[in-house]
Length: 451
Image 1 (cartoon, rainbow, N blue to C red):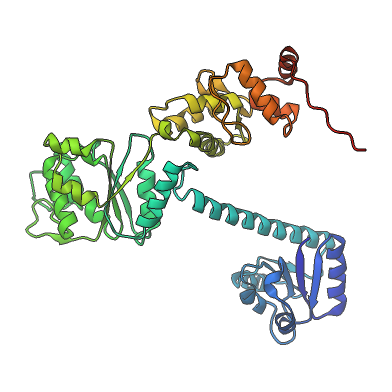
Image 2 (cartoon, rainbow, N blue to C red):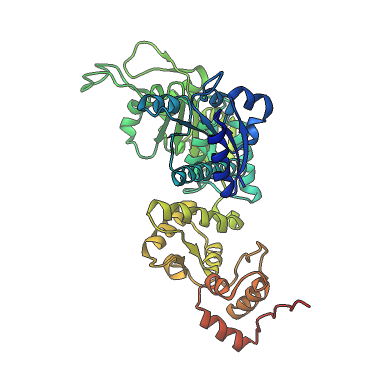
């Protein structure tokens, strides 16, 4: 039941509107003016305010500023485009002219209330996701990822240089973007540079820029990517691929906050936060003479290490479902789900390409699947010998055969799931489920009769 405040000075209209909305199961409160409403009622306690535009004392639109997030629907017998536009500009959620059709009013009220409920649900989900998964696209309830999320929360508000380490496909750029977005430079540019993708002969020009005439063919000046990131964040992906000459110049940027374009007589001050990432062991690179030790320590003020997917297998079910929902939406497919065997298989797979490989496998499966279910064949994975979790999130015993797994899963979940749900989760038909029950002597539990 929704609580609605009606502000209308004409008693007949107010009472008629009250009866109309009460017939549709809303709780109605009345007021004859904006002043009366503010003096006698807690505005924040309502789900919707319906007010006449012309009222004694103050116009109905004066309630909008006091309503905060509570939607305000304006009605008036002086229907005109001008008054409608003015009401909307002041923050009214919508506008209706008197005399109005009762069905139109009910539909409009229903739509506004439903929009409000949806917005509150989304706000709650967003808050929950921010707390659990502060990095867009990164999901993990396990201790490894929770440690990463905690580090991001602590480091993001600072200007400290960060080195993100981890294997390819673990989400290093996502962490860099989160550090930028959640920090004080979030409104500035985020410039991502893959050091491995720029030819060695060009990388200094790309990073530090050059002035006109700096070398043959330099017919005009060129701003480097470091200067382009002024006021924001420069993300140097695969920093271990940076040539030694460029490493020396980058060290000056980190040490002195200055960049000197090629051919320029003087350095220029820059205000840039540097975040770097690597999948290489930079200490070994230092020993081999391929990476400067002083640059390593300048970059590694804070280090955030991302675990491989194989190191956080418990996160795979929630991560896979998150990626499946996002992929299905992007490809304009209806909501989809994994079979229980598919979830188990994903948890057993080593995923050498980490999250990127998992995401690609799911996208391929969504494209190839005709129905709403993703099975082993669509993922191109073999049947699991162990299913890592059951419906209640508890691990299944290790070293189960498929028949033992079937028995374990059915016995654990049949009290909470229908036969159709059990079959769906196992990726089989209801007939196949019944036949296996008969073969294994697994009778359905009988519902207790009420005495």
